[in-house]
Image (cartoon, rainbow, N blue to C red; front, side):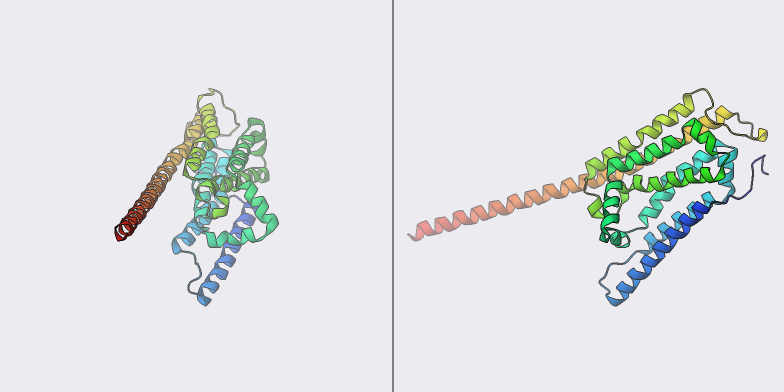
Length: 290
C-alpha cells in the first residue's frame, strides 16, 4: 500500500488478447513488407520512426492495462481512471495509428467485406458518433457504478473506449488516402466538433456539485468523492488542448495547399498569356509576309 492505494497488478484477458493480436499482425505485415523490399529495392517500406511509434503505443497500452493503475482507477480513484482513459485515447491510440503507414494497412482494402466495413466505420461522422456514444454511455452513472465491482466488465469498458478511439483518430491521421477524401477544412471542423460532447461532460463533472460515482477513496489521500470527480473532469479537458495542437498543423497544411493551388493557377495563366502572345506574333508575321 502507498498512501492507502492498492499496488496489486491488474489482469485483463481481453487486454492481453488485444495486445498480442495487434503485435502479431503488425510483425507479420512488417515481415512481408521487408521481404518485398529486399526483392525489389523500389518497393515501399516502413520507417523506423513509424515502427517505434507503434511499439511505444503497445508498451503504453500494456503499462496501463496490466499495472496497479488499472486497479486504482477501478476501485479507488476516479481521477486515476480518467487519467488512464485520457492517456489511452489521446496518446496511445495516435501512436499506434501513426505507426501504421499506408503500405502496412493496404491489404485491408483488398478484402471486399472488410473494406466495406472499414470504409463505413472510418467515415468522420460515424467514427465520431461511435466514439462519443461509447464513452458517454459507459460513463452513465448507473452503468459505470455497476462496472467497477466487476473487473471483467470494467476491462471491457476500457477496451471498447480504446478501440473506438482508434476510429476517432482515423479522419485526422489515417494513412489510407481512399478512406480520407475530406480536405483540410473538413478535418479542422471535425476536430472542433468531435471534442464538444466530452468537453460538456467534463464541465458536468466539475460543476455538478454532487458525486456521480461510488469510490472507496483512501482517507490518507485527504480527498473527498466530489473533489476526486472534479479533478477527473478537469483532466478530461486535456484532450481539448491536444485538439488545439492538432488544428495548427492542419491549418498550416491547408494554407500551404491553397498557396500551391494559387501558384499553379498563376503559372497556368502565365503560360496561357505567353501562348496568346506567341500566337499574336505569328499572326503579325503572317500579315507582314502578305
